[in-house]
Image (cartoon, rainbow, N blue to C red; front, top):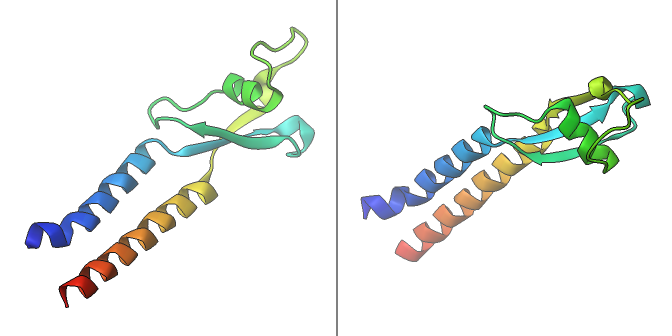
Length: 105
């Protein structure tokens, strides 16, 4: 019984650990005054996206023209999306635990 009771917590901890290892990133073009921005996906923390990755994601072009500098394209950790994802996992875990408790009663 003890193993089943802790399974949702272990699963949630594992999922959150993976989310922290592969967090969501966003990109901003600083030259646009922040108007050009968007999600650039999930990447490992040990190999985050580059300014060129941001350029590719925001502009939809794989190779910038020679007169374009990608230095103004900045990578940022999407903390709002990461927090939302963690909250969803925690709420889902709480619901599962409550359902499991009610089934035992």
